[in-house]
Image 1 (cartoon, rainbow, N blue to C red):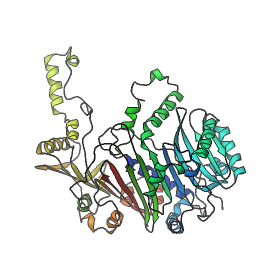
Image 2: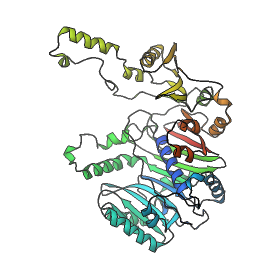
Image 3: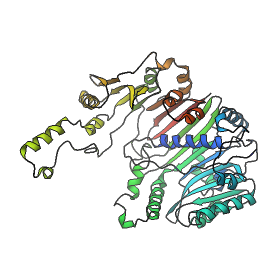
Image 4: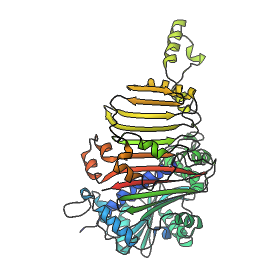
Length: 506
């Protein structure tokens, strides 16, 4: 049987959003879950018991900024569970039992030598950012031949590699990639990531049995992202003076690259660890931050799990979140509500009056978003009509004035919403929303929330078959059919946080 090729993911690129307490780990975890599912599927034809070679952390430089690894030769318990889960994805295989792989270059150049342990890392070398791909090698000669062909197609400036004794280190970047691969290999030989105490301490938190994990040194994230953005911009032909002032400032990127690791609204500190474990009915992905700087956040007084359980059992998506301080700089984000005198020059009084009347009718969404400060939002979506969701949402705000602002904004939306305000509570329900029973009565929901943090400040539940039902991509529905539900929860631990993503696979 032809062994399938494996595409190792590059580090995720996150949109810059600035808030006091944001949700960076959840984005990282979500990206990791997708990468792991693709990675496991790509290796379904490989015997999990096969000799796997060195761990990825043993051949990765100790000063990488971010790192993710997959180990397809875990303990016997994980091997059994992984094999059982893979058997539930028949659409991923050909009639002969081979994994469906369309990239012939990867099949020819990577598959013949790739071992069962591999990883990806973000590394800064001489002010340039590189993506490192490290892997165990089952045949060093075939690895050298295949990677030579890859380098020949891409050029040594953008792709470089080193083949060691039973392992491979590759580097991808915008310049001097071959030199970077050689330097990365030397750095890993001197001080591997596996020997870094902060990494070892973080990984200890993970369950003993896991088949994949990720780690990030948050203190170096700003520098790394600055280097990567600079390389990409200059590679596109931009001179440094053409790059907008402040865009590549480390302080700017440090406070905006993660959409909210607690305490990271400023210079980042601490570490992040993520781990994935196979279970009898799916995959559990856990994360935790250590040593994050910033204001400690208390768990919400409300029980978010119970609140979501009160929503409709017909929901395709349901969730609840305790929202912290609203982002700064929202004024004018959704358009002006007043005009600058210069904008009125040359207009007669009648025209000015008409413009001002129109502006008066325009809802101030910036004001409405600020009203979400320190609020609690619980929602459910039971379907889609046209392009509009059929939803019910309850928003508990800090005071009646905030509730009034939110209600005004909701009523102005191009949706048929019934909006009611009672003191600090706003409830909005769209036409067509159904609630035949409570979500808490659903066995699937109960299975999905099992083991989640007990006092989360964020909880999202997705019934995947219902969510994908309207999709026009039949292949996606067929491939994802074994995944019945996804639950995501995050909980504060002072200035740090922990969370979990749970996939139910049947």
